[in-house]
Image (cartoon, rainbow over all chains, first blue to last red; front, side, top):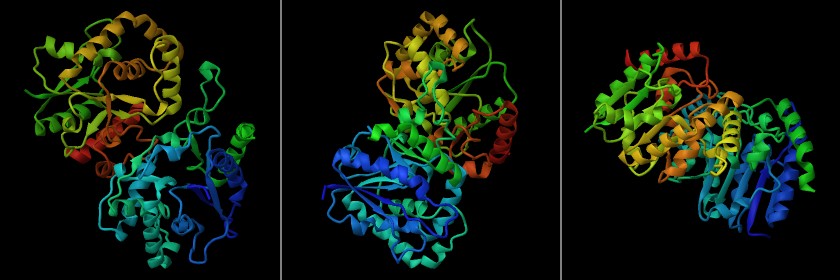
Length: 247
Length: 237
């Protein structure tokens, strides 16, 4: 057992329209290489816990699995880490680290409003992060436990949630704030979301540089914000372009 | 002595009325004064007039304390807290520019290659928007150096824009201010919310709940006019 852990939920949902493993298999290969390089344990959750309705709630169960580890990363299965990204566990001590999620302000606004019913606090964009890449000290495992408890207490409503605004992310953000956790905000390079909207799939043609910006400047590429079909294509294309670096 | 909100408004596009009116309203509440530059004063491209802020204030015998340089395509919420309280006087207050990294990367690469070869190529994700910059008297010398650099390198700077189309003042300011100053203070994006179309937030009510200063850049001019008017009317009419 190493002292730090990367935890990924990658569960194939038989009821889903598309098999998520079609892209996650590439993402996981990148994490396997990187964790092995840095002496970090990697745990992939492939079977949903019977307590969970939607597979995404298995993320919170990291609080059970990660007991004994010093620092933990919970990352989504649609993220790929650059082969030579530095060891992010060296970036913090007893902090909770995340990246702001601010590429679609209306979505966040709606989500904050929709989930406010579970909390008695206000939240602004300055407080709001993306839950797809989280690095934290073990003392914050308790936050995951609290989120899971809230889920279990409202399971029927949350499993049938049709108001929009995502599933666990906003609840997670509210729980952080409710527990007076001020995240250490990291550079977007540690969680590049909505890369298409910010033109990060392009490269600097004027300098005859063919390397896409997201590969050149980012450390963790998060393939979100577009259709699942496009995600499969983009992840596969990306992997074919970079896989030689992981051998 | 008042704080100054400095707006360059050459050609006075019709949308700028919403900008200036909103800033005047906010300034009245915050012991500040709006100073608008409307006349060209040299052969230098008006995009660069923002860096002459100290010279122009002093030539006009306007006393100043803190200074906010802001673009004429912004609208401020009337209840915005005092912006000058957010930044200590030794730092320059800026906001990240996170709308179109392809443009900012190409711009940075081009200016770095052809003009700023001896400067540090700063982190791509620390590029700031020059449409909202909080200054103090302490930065007068910094801006003197910027003006000096501009005058000494004007042809090279123009050459980059002519050949790459990657903007005029913003990227050079990204190189110069972080080099000459005592450090940048990155403010909340709520103080300079850019790329409203890309970030899918144009509804005035939503804007008013989410941010303080709305920057109508990165959109066609006709959209800018409509959206600024809509927001201004919601907030002030």
